Length: 331
Image (cartoon, rainbow, N blue to C red; front, side, top):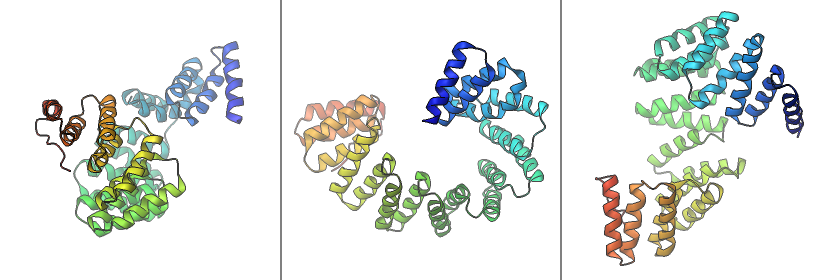
């Protein structure tokens, strides 16, 4: 409500004085808080252009630009910001992130090292160093950096998650599961940590604990669609088609434009012999993704189950044109 009042005030101010730099600046902050990143970027840029003294606000613009995929303008902004105000550890860390995103790993590593030199306890800089070593295929150094980040901040969920991912790739499965579990304990809303934990649990045959992981997420955020989708996938592997169907349907209710949900639900309907519903879901999947070979192949299998061979062959022909190696699902 307070944001609504402030937004109303700044909108009126800008209507009366279109070049008012501070009104654009603070309206940009409100838009960013509401995840209107494009609008926030425009307002903060307008503020900087109108009043060069607002150059100290370049870091706010820098944080918004990557959300729009613009790396080069960000780096230019940071060079200008550094010229006007020498960077501290946070500045070096942020610029290092941008170099890393742009693929300039040596420059990024140099900035992260500078950040650590200024602040030896800067766990986030160690995390990003680890990412660069991982990108450069130096897993040993990456593991050392992730571990250092955790030693500096033992409640750093992202560091546990990154170390879990690395441990999984190098075959340290028990350590990976422990790290995924810790990351999930620290941030039970993190779908990536949850999914990583589930994949490790399933590899051990523990589907029940995998489902408990998503149950926990839904207790905290019942309106989040993702746990329904991933829990449904686990239920399919357990053979709980009724439970999976309910979860995929809930996912579709909450996020109706996510095509894979329709694919999976169509498969379940086909297995249950509810073929008209399966065709309807395949049709919707193709409406959302007209070039999906999987959707054509799935619908082909359902047509075949209905005894409509001509339609099945026509859909498989379309599927193979999109993906020559695809095969129809077996039920």
